[in-house]
Length: 157
Length: 190
Image (cartoon, rainbow over all chains, first blue to last red; front, side, top):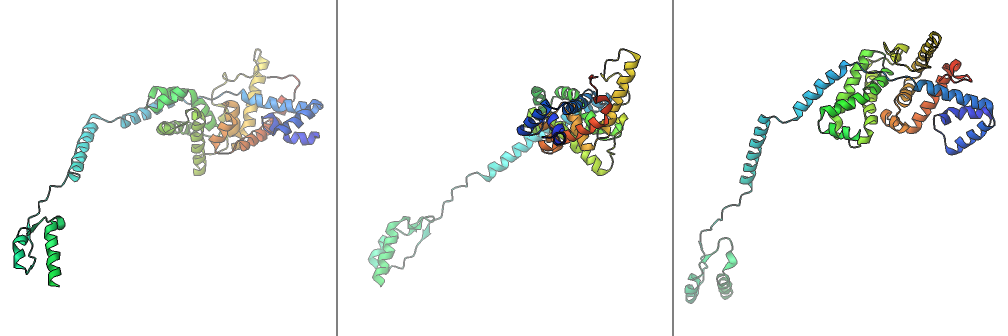
């Protein structure tokens, strides 16, 4: 590595950058080159000069103004007693509405229906009369009535 | 610091005040290095902490607070510059502050002559810093004055760590050239 090549990379190495391989090459060159060592020292001194500048404080009144904003924000965040009452009331209404929406429907008792089977066999009328009513919700729940109907249809055919 | 951040997240004004005290000078110095007007710098510093307070409950990485705070500040500065309200040029005065003669600890000034030398050197360093491009100056102020790591600076400025390293290197070269008469000496004044 020549001196001009090194100068190209020196500042990068001085600030802690560069690949390990580049750093190795730079350091190897520096061991045998007083001029480049002086340049490296100058770059390091420039960094130290800046580092010794001190931070500047913000105007002292800034916190007072900021505190007012922060405290107002805290007051806005905290729920007030009135807010709590409103919250409880709203929650109660919601629960009531949900309760009404999801309550079980009342059981519907279907009125008995009379089935006129049109059976021609007079001997079977008594038996049919015993099965004239059927559950509205489950018309086939009376197998006897269903059987009679089928039997009578077979006879007609 | 983690505890303070966690406490402030719960709404503790006292914890937030402690965080403000710890970071206000860093944030103000950074903003002051980017905008010319002191009043605007103060306003942006306040806005930085206002936004931080409002967004604090959403901060997950408590250890990243400082970098996060600088990111807020950097975004505010960028928005101001875009809007045209802020002027980027900084002067020696804006980097020096208005009245901080006693704050700088440059070469021990035990005689009238060394006082003059120390003051001159300090002014020259500030002038050299003021002449850097804004993005280099931001990196230098965060790194050299505030001690932020390259990773923290990268996060704050929204760039890659390699970019920060490159800006620091270019800035160092420029500072070395401008401060040649102070850094090309056998006897280290510092």
